[in-house]
Image (cartoon, rainbow, N blue to C red):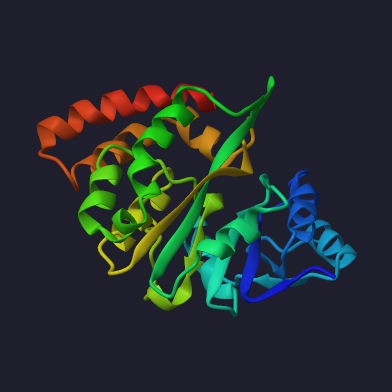
Length: 262
């Protein structure tokens, strides 16, 4: 019988009719440590209900959703446990994801997150330019005492967003109110990390690729990039850390990394 973490919930954010939803749920059911699983959606439909029902999973509906940022805040709060992982319907998790994260969770953890790999049209990518840069940026957080440093995590975030949102486990006791800002579409997670970086506690980094992030033409990230929204949001985020003239240059450099999502 698998050990169970009764203080953790996977909340799967489901939207419309993703063909990857069942695969995501299966990866959570196959964790080496069992956990509660909930499906949260603002687009309640028969397809989502059928798949959730197949696995005996509760569906909670976000009524009067104001957009994707509100859906993410709803997802964090939908978990009834202290620790919540908001799983994206298009992604999947390695069997040891929760076991490895659980080993490193502490009472002062704000968020815990893992390394990841990507699936593109031409297959799985465990290493590319984007992933190498993100791993380099996060490398200081391999040192446990630096995970507590507000200065260090803000320096990391000042160079970009190396934290993969679906890899993140939230400590709900460290979160007050909304952390996802509705005027962002591309960078609402980056802004959330920036807000949480000011909080006393730890950013716990598990430097193992324990989840797969799927890059595909129907993903929200790809849609945003194709609509040209991301560069302005990158600049706005850079301005939180740098003078405007430096922020403008950094945003241009950062934009070149978008090519991996096209």
